[in-house]
Image 1 (spheres, rainbow, N blue to C red):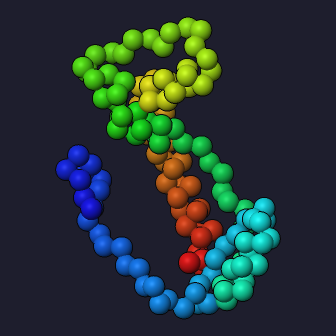
Image 2 (cartoon, one colour):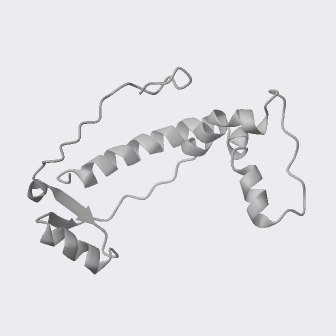
Length: 132
């Protein structure tokens, strides 16, 4: 449901029909999908269609959004966070830097990434057309 803390959230019911006729569904699969899995779906009557190539795109908007959403972990007092210490193991350095990257994105770059994101969303919608 909707959350007061997330103005982008909505309350919308999820309708699940446990008696749905699965043979009426068209499911896309990747060429690398395990054949045993695909065989099981076929045995259930599912219509399988190999997915076309998925559009590739890059957008830093998700990183910025994540940084904004989790900023209280990085900077609970609202101040500029301390630099990440040198010499940490790579995994720990990545963990600590995960939600800081969005702080360094220029507004112009963010807006441009939002434009690219919209184009990518439209391309994905076309690719997914015909699949359930």
